[in-house]
Amino acid sequence: MIAIEKAKFLNFNPFCVENDIDIIIDKNIIIDKGKNIIKNYPGCEIIQKNKIVTTGIVCSHSHIYSALARGLDVKIKNSKDFVQILENLWWILDRALNKEMVEISAQVCAIEAILNGVTTIVDHHSSPNFIEGSLITIKNSFEKIGLRSILCYETTDRNGEEKTKKAIFENENFAKIIEKEKKDKGYTLTEASIGAHAPFTLSDNTLKELSKICEKTNRGIHIHVSEDRFDPVFNRYFYKDEPIKRLEKFNLLNEKSIIVHGVHIDLDEIEIINKNNAILIHNPRSNMNNSVGYNKNLRNLNLVAIGTDGINHDLIAELATAYYKNRDEKANLSMQDYLKMLDNGNIILKRYFGQNFGKIEKGYIADLVLWDYNYPTEILDSNIAVHFIFFFNSGFVNTVIIDGNIVLKDRKFNFDIDPIFENSRFQAKKLAENMKKMV
Image (cartoon, rainbow, N blue to C red; front, side, top):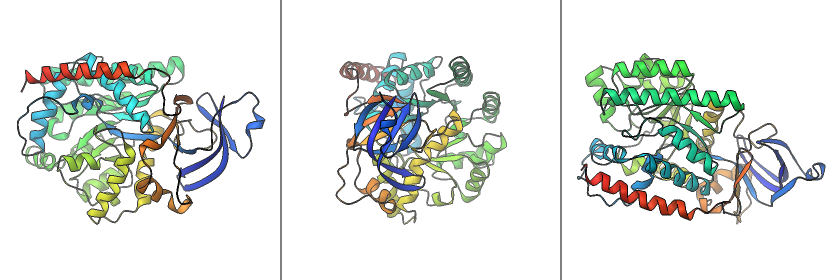
């Protein structure tokens, strides 16, 4: 049993500041909170005092397979549009990955996520020459570091029929592994969704097979949709329909569906997403980096969460960028709207794990972040979003608790991270060598 003493709690749902509050955590659950209550729990270990505390941050869409791509020493062709970026970089990189590279990528991303106050990564993975066993590899790497996650493998037709079948099997098999773990242990730190690349690389037959797996496993699709104009144009030309309408046709939209980007979805598609209670993931920095555009209709969506698309796992930077881009585009969403989007990642967790996330209350899962923020003006219910967007940064993260376990304290892990990063640099060189043979 552990305790946090005299904390300032910042709640996002609803916005509320609570001062000088103690919190008691037993196993992975918050069992009590209130003023001066630690005396009621003799023998309880006080791990921190006088910190700002929030619920853990959820990165609602990422790609850990991109971890080794930073400053990549590979000369690739110039890309004139988004599809060429995929063809000339990412669809070469993912084919160059092997098990060791995937493993170290996951460990590096888990460490960096936790340092940024991220307690869960919702990942979308691709490694076409290492499909079978890739998700359990990521799971083991994440859990070794202590990170919560929802994992899937990217199904696509672009690598041929055999690899499409392997991708579908990997998703289904991993979901079965998770179900067995929950049955055996009564609990899991990792969940499974069903991964798919994007409608423009998926035939009707493949969407039909994915739909069967979603129904069979009681999971949702995790898919990019209309990230770039090419996706809707391609679907209208070859399938005579919009991307979201194709997904609806195959019963791929429900409350567990994770729809990513949606930069070029129209109002009719937004209505379909809302009707099916699906959630859209906004990745503003990636969208800006790839010059794919901006959707001014985000305000019409019932549920939006925030991801990074693998750029890194600094969700505070992503949050600020989302708000500033909204201002630049005159899209008229408030700071509070964007902080709610960040908090909405907890809705995904509740839908997949079936437990209570996202509040510092009795009975909720203890995924928490403790911050060192020496606020120059008082934090009030009315200005939490102002402080978070304009003044917080991920360097303020001091301690991170995931599932009741202290995974970071005083900004230090309880293991040596240097060998992991040394191995990462070694694997990055091997990745570059593999890619040079392909370009």
